[in-house]
Length: 424
Image 1 (cartoon, rainbow, N blue to C red):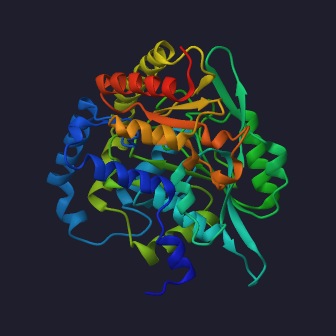
Image 2 (cartoon, rainbow, N blue to C red; image 1 turned 180 degrees about the vertical axis):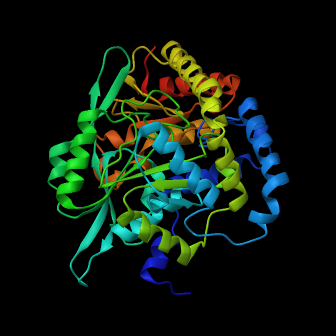
């Protein structure tokens, strides 16, 4: 069956999606035998589950007929849109109205909508391909499936900078970003997936200034950040700016399966996103929207974040760092990204004998899953082999699994690195 150009692009799984399918198939017969450290799900935190279950039961009792049995507005359920505007105006003093808000079925879909609207072949026809630019690669691998046009996504490779001890941190290559002349939209997760890195005030000022000079949107994905789920400390609050779209999701706060997210930004960006949503998915699930509205308007979401979610991941991160510092080979040049937040540990093995896919395959034979680092970089990793091939020398480990699974898997990671690269 012949496919269109867009069909060919969208019918192909990204590299990480193939990894996720491999994990699903491998663990289907007996997931209890596997140590899945590649998982992207948030941790199953009993108090968070209980809180969302309570809020959902209230919505079922009070709102089911009026929201689940009727179609709703594409912008979002009015009760949630009002709750969002009140919450962000009270917390940050933004002065937004419903015209600045769109609710969508997950942040992935909202990012896809923005990419479709603000990147791609330009007008007039034939004026060139405007790209989705990731200013700090590596970044969330799901972004690579957003463009419906071949070559529509590009990333500016970050510069790894060694820090004291076994840590490192990425820095922006602002001159390289400034030199791009085909920016249609910039897209950045902060705290980042996979690194946990957040932007600081000076970096945000550079990005917003560049967006204003190029008259393009900067989409900031706060999936792990402020105000929720606040997995780790962020350095700057979400900004209100005429060239910024802020995207928020409830997934990492404990509702990944309900697919509720929202974007806030200038009406000139949000209005077209509402229309796109109306023409494609109609609207986000409505019962889940009322659940989120209750959590915002009552303060229960803020309490859940401050009392449960943030402390949980802070402790999990400290435990993981201590464990890997004890387990990893001393004689190997390995480093962990010094994350400000997020659900993952990101490792850099600065050794020519190391290859991320080889580590993946060796660990898979030991019934351990990690995520190879190459899938978080946009460009073809095969083009960057040899000395300095940073994108093939990284991997991601999730902090979501049970600590006993993380400990057993961590020990096997260290063992396998010794087999691959030596060290003591």
